[in-house]
Image (cartoon, rainbow, N blue to C red; front, side, top):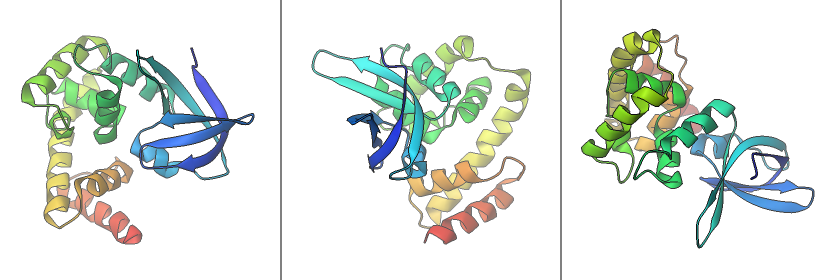
Length: 194
């Protein structure tokens, strides 16, 4: 099993990077924010999970161990494959997922293609036992998730794609509270990339 890769980024796309390890290029499926952070011809270290199927071997990579651990928890849920788990991590970082699970908020999960309300509820229910949800997650999760949902909705209504809005929201400091302040901070980030 390949549990980590350390090498040089040779190529990148929105959902994968090619990592050159001693002359061998490994295609690694990664969350979108990881692909955006990766810099061509620069070193990268990824925690990895190798998904073995009859017709393919897919390597999934993450910048930190916590995200890998959450990914591996997600794929233990019946009906959630590696690509769906990666889709979930594209819309919700592990901390946000923990808060959503603590507050039984399915709004982030239903934004993932192929996950309806029933599947989202099933994921939340199964993750409650598996994720290490703290009391702090439970108390802040509901309000934070609702506020972030409002921020996403506002940014999309202003004409930004949901992906761009979500990426900007991930970069907004957790110290900034309140939907209106978070929208302003996200707009500043989005205007820099425009």
